[in-house]
Amino acid sequence: MGYKEHERVQVKLEFLRMITRLKINPAQMMEKMENLPEEEKDMVMQLPNSYFERGKEEGIEKGKEKRNQEIALELIARGMPIDQITEITKLKKEVIKKLADE
Image 1 (cartoon, rainbow, N blue to C red):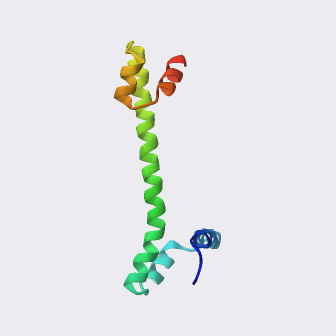
Image 2 (image 1 turned 120 degrees about the vertical axis):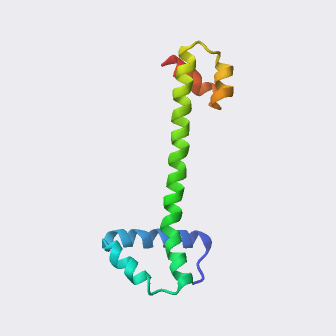
């Protein structure tokens, strides 16, 4: 269609917003998608899945961060030096010091 990269992102975003406002029945949409050529169907299916995967990855990272903070709190309670806690949890010293102050 001749869009520049930043325009393509905006067009995709607006399209997704339109879809959500239309409140389309997912079952009906899937049924219609079955009639698309295989290559087109694959491309259409990748879009929501890529957003789902990105969100899933971000959630996993946040979960790891939270777990590392819990471990750091336990190590602080046991009197372990901050340098060692940093090495074990890979958290920044500032984060560990803040946890220790709380």
